[in-house]
Length: 536
Image (cartoon, rainbow, N blue to C red; front, side, top):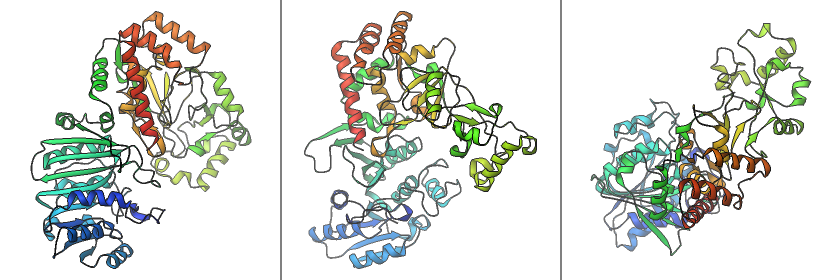
């Protein structure tokens, strides 16, 4: 089924990853891909036929008298609508992964919008048809790769030599680990690759951030890879940047880096190797918290633990989020504030013993979980004892996982545990958690968070452990660390821009030796990245 199709009056996404593509997006892709009246076109996820209708119109304007249009979709309802809208196309009711490229003629153009959620027959298993098709093309994808990735790879197999591919794809192409293999594949198979990204969302009702992908010259090795950025599709002002193909081959390509001018990236890369600058992963192990499989059940508020009469020996003080945490230390006072506010601040920490050996009150609570189906949830049912949460540990510090602003880094002054909604930091020997927490608020680290993390829909910022490890942090001298700690304790700085002045002055100017102009450039770049992200 189509990923996104042209009718604006349809506001809600359909099943199987079907959303409706804005007409301007369809026109942009088709106008670029279809260049000759003799071109043959395939839409592998045609939905209601938006791309096929536009391709037919395009061929007519080019003077074609013979239309060779093919559309594929797994939905009979969608194809029924396509037949009503475009009469001169061959439409195939089939799962696209079931179609062997040799069963159809080779095409000049493949255009469309792949499904974004898991395909109906794509279950993430390594033996699925999706993975098999990707492997046939020489691409090894991990088990949890989203369906668009094997779909895109399979779609290229229907092109003739010299053919073109134009598609809407998620912005995951520019940052997801599994997308690295897709990009490597594209630069091996196409002479030219271009990505267009826009500050304004292409699809207003879609949480997924999207980009446009253009690949030309199938069957040849890449000679040119460009990234173009603009405010929107109708913008007269665009910025085009050339991509270093070695960065793609080495897995270092990050799409959002190409929002910044070369001068800023050069400064950033130079600071990355400064003796006083570290990657967070060089000074701390970054990992995820424990996985309960049912957070609402395994976490309890003060009232809930009293209601069920669960003894303190079966509870661990926990923090589930870093909202409303001031300063750089998450201490007992702030945890107490969450407890008094009625938040869930305890983890149910049951030892690995038979349920019958537990107190009756705790047995009753676990029985309620079983009645509610908690024991049958995936993470629970795969444990030896479903109610025993593994890998619970106390970290030196916490780093926020998803937020609308710069991630928070706070030290764990209350000895709390945390689930996988927060990253856990264990600082290595010789590295002080409090010093790095105090020096976190500076323009270089703020920019680094934006560059190494990635945007979700609605302006949310997300950072995976592997991305967090690449964030640049400044190693302060002992005197500057003391001063910053005192300042943070005296006046908690909640990531307001004015607070960056002090940190930039002591960390970037005095510790590293960069100029005022360079500080301003870093801060402005971080703000540009943040503003762009918040439009997504």
